[in-house]
Image (cartoon, rainbow, N blue to C red; front, side):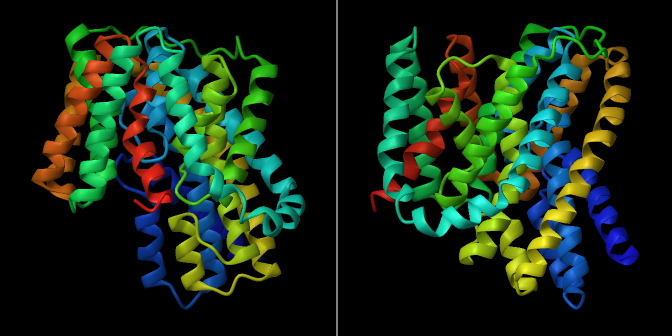
Length: 393
């Protein structure tokens, strides 16, 4: 038991490392561990689960503070950056922590219900995906104050997504678009506007309990849904929830993002147990490592609970320390450094063509922001190809 606990704690510390390092994805490390330690399946499964859960908490810190996204947390850059400039980055971070804590815990508690319902409705929801996604795109345009410019931003991002995902064979093509649309554009605009980061407020104030509970419950429901519907990721689900639920406060939206990031991992493990399907890279690694039985299900829940508790406490402390000192640094130099590192990352790990794609995506993101169009509309880059996949086109 002590040995197993040590593996869980090791997974937590690895999750901190992957979460704080833009571009180092937890899925990659999971498969490395699979190759190196395949002879100790139970311990390594516990480590992988803890690492993934911890990563889902910590990847919001570089996203909010530096504008450097993880592949699942990139939508948090947009509201998170606004909180940072208002001196409320700690509040933004706390909202994502609260979302992960409440949604993750409630998701584990809902396990018996989910496992009972899943086999009965699995066949139904995928049939609704094309209509639902199409309706969301139409609603976004119709309710936008700048319909023509919103349509242009959506059309350009969708066209780029179709070209990259359907026509070109680019390593890490989605990541290249994500970095361009949501990170490079944020950093470029920040350098253009030369903002000064204020001293950050570290007091726990202004947190709305109703928003936190609402966001967490929406995150749990969204995670349960995407666990059943292949092709829909956490960021797409958060985007859909925001459009379907009507006007949500930024506080509530950040809580949704934090909750859905964590809960998505939990429900993907339940799906693996219930129907043997893999919805995440973590689930695929575990499927290749061990037989998923009822004992393994208990291991999933226990490792996840420990990782949630570890992440909640440690991220608060680390976040406070970083945000207490961030105003002492030149934010212009920091942004320029992160921009240069992201460009180098794209060149080395994705290739020249991916770098070119990311720069095009950056220009689309800048177009949307400069024309006061919500950059979340650029999610069309992933939504339109998803619709076509479901339609068999």
